[in-house]
Image 1 (cartoon, helix red, strand yellow):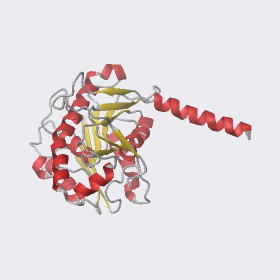
Image 2: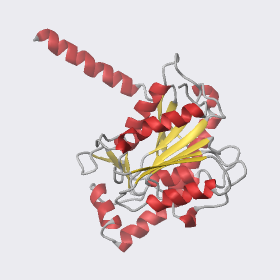
Image 3: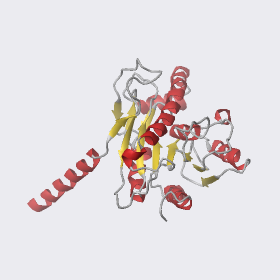
Length: 295
């Protein structure tokens, strides 16, 4: 019995050490542009209906870095943007769990905490439901006001990773962005109106909120897209994924679209025994074809 307790203690200790090794960095030096007066504390909500760690009231954007084993590191990097309706961030299912999977493929992962709406409650999920499903106009406006800051953080994260590519052993021409739902808005937005500093080399919006009104011009050097969504998406975002694919496909740019029969909204890394469970494996297949990871 004593030996079992010791083994368990070692396992927990190892887990803590591994988590501690995931360095966290700020993406802006000094005050955060546009929200210099945001001084509230970030909050964490556990045990919600989202079944993952939920972070809210993010005022200082940061990146949690997952570095692959040097023996398999391939120089590819990806910024991962969790969703949460610009009100909160589903950090586990759409952030840390994704990084833990991709880092085993040799990819350096940067999980982004981006600015979201300021809420005066500790129940971010209820606030989200009141806004999205309840149609609370004040809360919807608060959500809407945060969107430009969230998008700016996605682009700033790519810029940060490229500027520090040498520090992390990254190829500056192999930096992508992957996002879910509202995080997918950040990912898709990065494919438009970019500069040399913040242009992604590949983009993966997963069940993204990205209506046609947010689309800009598809440039001649537009990055390749990998898009995934469920046909039974509960927020009815299927058409937006199709529209984004069509925007690329109609001008003969590189895009791949997966529409899964089941999975609903927010499938992320959840195992639901539907074909959406394997979306990340298809994403890895796509990365391999692009020679961003090994087959």
